[in-house]
Length: 195
Image (tube, rainbow, N blue to C red; front, side, top):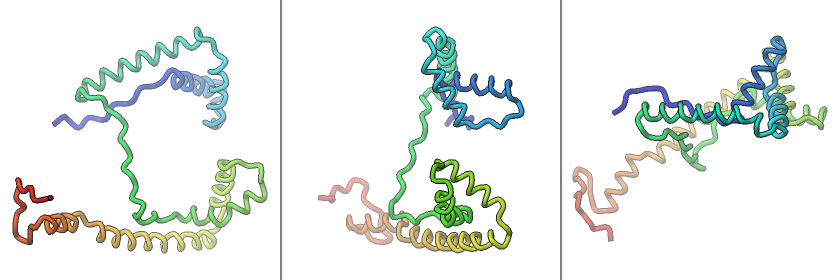
């Protein structure tokens, strides 16, 4: 078993190095300005598309060196390529997660904000909702916190029932009963009586 080392950091693409450089240049030029990642990304994307291959070459070289670093770290880590974990598929029958107080608030107020600003994109609406939420009085906020607490209880109860219904030990017992093994008996290792 290999040591518990931190996982290997992934490779950075040429474009990734370019965006990082753009971001750092912007921070140097405007140190006191709050940087919006979406704005920087748009500007970087437009600039990248118009750059000549010669201008991009240094970023490809940086990416090549980073790929070599990555391969060396993979070899040191354990010799196998470390890939992103695949997400486990969500059970469609699992209970829906509990919603936060802010989510309940957003659900109530989103239509109102959108009606006042139909030209706004989703992100702008979310920012405005965040500002409203921040300025709510304790009394107003407690309404949504109560809803969230009730939903948390609902989720906990549904999760208990769900786990009881999907208990792996119960599934194991059912499997043994299907092949003729009863309580207290051990299943026969070479039993081929499945047909």
